[in-house]
Image (cartoon, rainbow, N blue to C red):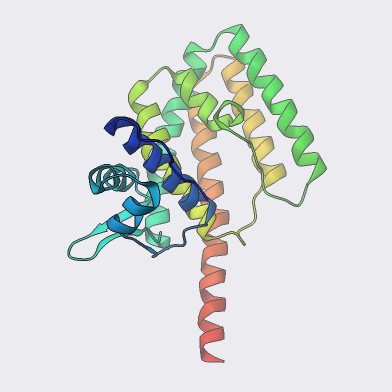
Length: 234
């Protein structure tokens, strides 16, 4: 549990509250739909309500908190329709990022990308039935490609808005399994196109990769929803 014991400037207070709440929401410590009361949070973090209100507004902009009129803030519950919309945007932006990365990547970039995928390969081989866990932003294949794209707008939209929502989606559906081996193979094909400097192929392969990811996820979401309905009728 995060606490804030110091009395920082307003900007630092907002950042501290925001970081703490983000971590707890994305870890599932604060559950979907749970109310985030300003007064309770202000007391907990020993700050005024102003920084709390600003932090909640920032988290709402990131798509992981909902500000409900006359009710306050709550942790967002991401529906199947929400997930589908997120993946549509992800497919468009990440395929463009892959194309730009192929056009801009240096030999050093390609070498580092190959080393990253080798590292991922060892991780997936150790847990072939598990999810494809990539670690922090420096070790995440998609974030690395977004950085290599050199497009600050794509990077900002994905890193600050779309990826937090995808992280919340994964938190809310912990039973969803990954596509470890298949996803790794798709990543390698994309990396090969980037190595060849072929932006068109990199874009196509990334589009297919995201589409495959959504097909797997949507099937599992539908199956989970059917199981819930069956249990409710039992």
